Image 1 (cartoon, rainbow, N blue to C red):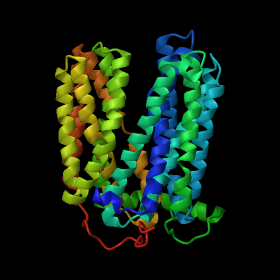
Image 2 (cartoon, rainbow, N blue to C red):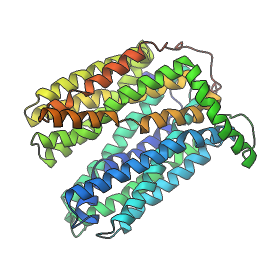
Image 3 (cartoon, rainbow, N blue to C red):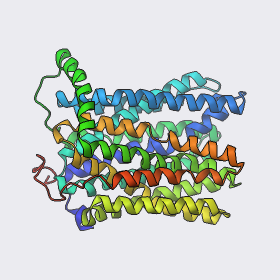
Image 4 (cartoon, rainbow, N blue to C red):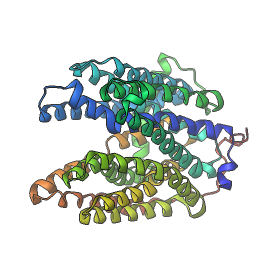
Amino acid sequence: MKSIRGLGRPAWAWAMYDWGNSAFATTVMGVFFPIMFKDYWCAGVGAAESTFRLGFINSAASIVVAALAPVIGVIADRGSSRKKFLFFFALMGIVMTGGLFLAAKGQWLFAAGLYLFASVGFAGGNVFYDALIVGVVRRERFDIVSALGFSMGYLGGGILFAVNVLMVSKPELFGFADAGVAVKWSFLSVALWWGVFSIPVFLFVDEPKGDGKELNASEIGKGIRELFATVREIKAHKQVFLFLAAYWLYIDGVDTVIRMAVDYGMSLGFSTGDLMKAFLITQFVGFPSALIYGWAGEKVGPKKALYFGLVVYVGVVFWGYRMETVDQFYVLAVVIGMVQGGVQSLSRSFYVRLIPPERSAEFFGFYNMMGKFAAVLGPAMMGIAATVSGSPRAAILPILVLFAAGGIILAFVKEPPRHNVDNGADHAGQG
């Protein structure tokens, strides 16, 4: 694709971080940690109790990141310290992920603590990874570069996840005693993968200019005080406020589909193996689809492309409601893979057009905070619908409200000019 070939080394180096850290989202968060937590670290504990513990850990990690994201964002902007903060959080995530290898059977508190800090490292690092996009390409290339990051994440995370699934399915091929040992080695492989592919972003991506202030205790205090002014500013900045409101609603729907798809499939009687295959399908379809979506965002604008994705998600909900066979579930996985990364990547590139580039980490702190608070309404709505109707199929229908409401609010967001005055990254992407 010509638009990709024209990107320079900084853009590719930036995208490689997504290739690396997405292994945590796929192998650890998505599949193996929940399985190990229930069957190994919480061995002998009732299913309801282990589910409660896992839910509490996930909620705690989300709350910590949601609370920290705006604060650390404004601090990093004041001292031009995005890369330093990225290094800190990435290192935390990598070390804690590798540490899961050491958690023995029954040590659920130890495993939970490692996972909580690994999750904070993963999500906290993403605040500064997202903010660095303003320094790698010109403003009019944000769509394709954001899409490149997500597509590399799908491919990189999918490749390692496929290897990890093979390790667990056939542990003898790798010299492991059993599947449990293979899973623990998978955690180490994720830490190594994440660490190695994080190196390019630190070597080849320049730190975007901040406000030129030296980062010290006084400036940190001023930054935190200014954070409250930023909240008022966002409320007054109609376009940013409307976009964040729309994003919170429709990304809640997207995240609900991601998080509840396995549970929904199991409620329809599909096997764990079928669900794992569907997960892999979504990952590998997501790789080229996110790139195509980025190209479409450049051609027709991100807003129109976002609306296309939301319409597809509405169709996904209706398809899921009427789904009967596992083959239909596989088709659903393909369709989700075609739009999931695109909606995520164009949301990021659309948002970065609306915010001041010199305060990107601060504003992305709020963006990531909204993302962390996502998937709150959707699962609750599904649970209520399932309880009231007594049907697992009816549970999926309320998600339509999230996509519809998000789409309606998005209509009031004015799309910034696609070919704008450069944001200070004239040199970026030329290396």
